[in-house]
Image 1 (cartoon, rainbow, N blue to C red):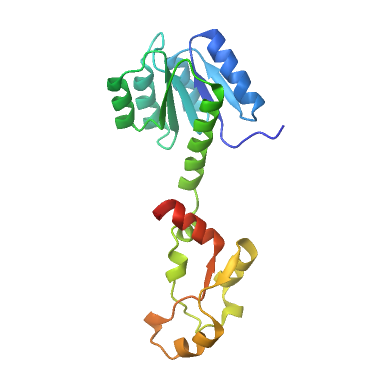
Image 2: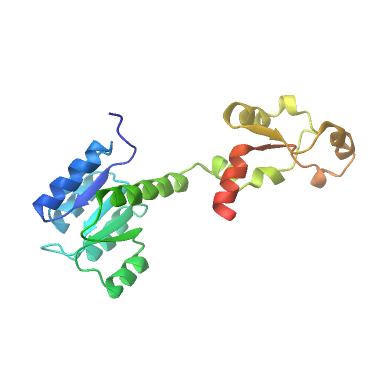
Length: 205
């Protein structure tokens, strides 16, 4: 089975829950490591890179939220998910203030946890997109100025779009002749992408 990107650290002191959740996630294709205590979790975080940490709120040594607070200082981009048999408004609000991605009361359906983990990893992936692609994501490409006077055949950006994404034409041929006569600050790139449209809706819509 192909392993899904980014490792997950599961911190749970109850053996049956820890082993069961780890087995489910592993069977679903995730790379999962598990520990029993907050101290063990912090040692792992110092040595290895994880995309998501799933924390029981009530650990035998350190409160799960306190663990996450320390984890964020070591790995600021990590996504945290709290699981707890003792949900409360107070801990939920504190989790939000610390940047916890989600909060799942026990008992829970493992499929619900898998869905949350998938969303967390998706957000992590979007945050790690290089700046060039981030420009595409927010739809800024649609408003990019042309600096080659519409000689698109020699434009590396147009070629990159054509080979990478589903390109479509924003400005038709009959309009290009008119735009060539406009000042440089009004010469907009004539190409867009289906990827731009999708991501623009996702981020801004």
